[in-house]
Image: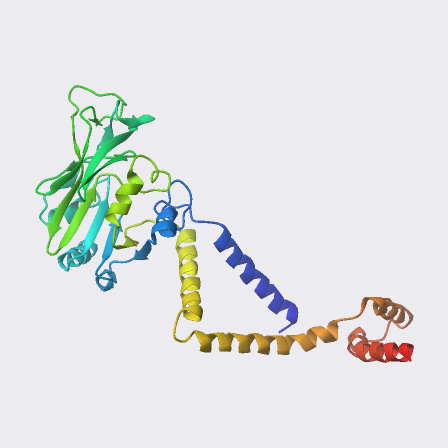
Length: 334
């Protein structure tokens, strides 16, 4: 294969890799999305990693799994989460659309997400769609900022968080409180013990987004949840586009290769093998490139010769030029 074909392939690979690294994901709840709707801060600052329902049982004992369902939880996923909870795991469920209601009912909590918009005209951040609420956790009370949140019917679960007395459910989404619309303090967080584990539910999936983490005491609440625990994000229930899926697979592969190369028992053999491959590639291609190299001050003589003898073979001349040029240089020095 011609050298320029190899070079073209290398350029395409390098350009694609550079694009994937430089251009971030823009999908909601992606750990690699640095924009307002992403969770890159959770990965960079708190060490969040992806996990799936297929390997959730193999997580360490101090694992805490965050679930941001962007689609309904099916039966298999619910069973995997129930098994994790039964074995002593902790799950934090953040849902404002009711996608998790089948799971909540299957574990016997009788809790449910209302899927109605919570507003607060008084205790808010800039607008009533960003109401404040108070969450009791670990013996502390956190004033958190919600973002287009819903409410939670706690059922038999323990109430952890409430909105203010001035909040209401905007059922018709007209921005104002109508007479028949519920109002007053409403549940936005609860916990339920299942097996040896604990399920914590929030009726808002946005409180830990990049844009929300520093509002109110959202960051402090996250740190309390993750205290002495290794945090994971369940990937199965997120809806990612093709670019995000491919990019995150590529980043994951690079991370795995890096860890194998520098942080594993086979790192030295791999580094030796890589050096051997690079040496072999350079040894193979360098002589060919060297043969094609023509000194700049001698190139004009080649063109002059070809003009005088247009029938001569250019490739043959290029191959003998290095020897002719070296002889020419030695004779000129003598």
